[in-house]
Image (cartoon, rainbow, N blue to C red; front, side, top):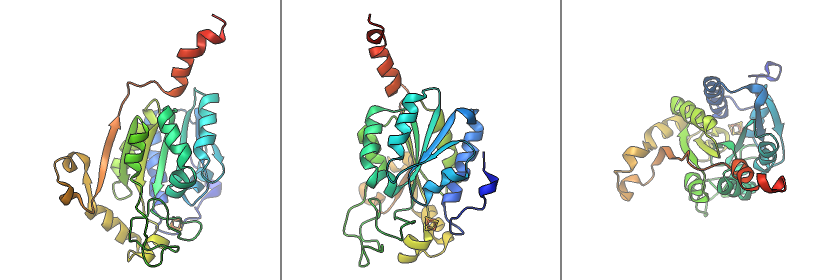
Length: 266
Ligand code: SF4
């Protein structure tokens, strides 16, 4: 599945993007899906470079517009598995509108969000997922904005599969991406990852392993989190599967079921 002529990647040594890409490849390998009937779409950003390394049908598109392009592919080729890969800035800021409406419409897409809590490629600006108080190039005294909870955003917009993992939890990430790839309708997998070059450097986690330690020590599985109080959950990242609803038809199926007869003039 890899374009070896484009290897090695341009990512900083130790960047978590490679772990997510590897998780995707391992998960994909377990699904039995056909690469000739798979399209992977990305926008712009460090994580969006992923499509350049893949030997699938790939589209490297405009900043924030990966989901819009992917929606077009999913509607034109309902026989395809369509995957979107992008960062927190690309998908929840510039592409935020596309994200919520793709969730609402239950478009048949798998969206893998590489959430490193900062804009990497453009030099460390704060994004919608930068935690309040954390340092970014554009918030040198600490971020004064509140962060998006991507899982809650996807759930409230109506996504039918929603999961969160981190690059420290490799096997879980593989499992969730595999489930997402086999899901019919929109599936969202948020993977928290390290941009040690910017987020880490600004916030005392300069080495990749420091961010890994952070994920290891500050995550809690959803099942356990459900038993914990709000106070106990402060500062914790909850990981797990938050929704898996196979009962709702995806947009294309629903549209065809509703309008198929009319288009035949019946
Ligand atoms: Fe990874 Fe950050 Fe380097 Fe981009 S800038 S490749 S996100 S470590």
